[in-house]
Length: 145
Image 1: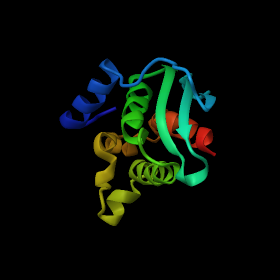
Image 2 (image 1 turned 90 degrees about the vertical axis):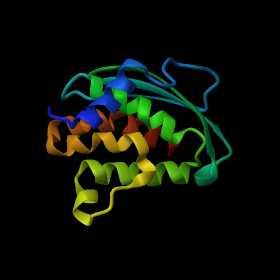
Image 3 (image 1 turned 45 degrees about the vertical axis):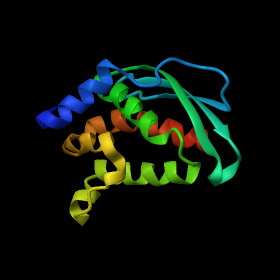
Image 4 (image 1 turned 135 degrees about the vertical axis):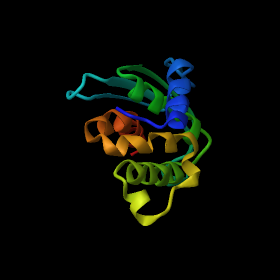
């Protein structure tokens, strides 16, 4: 897979120095996701304050086994989601998915709120890797619903 040098540097930084790694207590919900296509798997714990779309994500911890892309993706995700309400996390998920599906580029709008997650834009040219990147995002969405 070919990544621009800048995007590769961001992804490698998150892979080599993962943020919020390791399962922690207490948690409000725990989910486990597995990608049978490549063998990546994640256990994700989320701690919330409040209920419904206004609930705030206080913490996300995880244990992930898989490729560097899936491991970097969860690290980036935790930095974006912690401290936001569930509604905002869902909006980020939609924007990130659009970025990966190359819809953001087609519309001419690169979502600035995605910060380091924008580094995964190159993955849109490698459809087999999109599931690796989205594994943790899908797990978080399930945990929040």
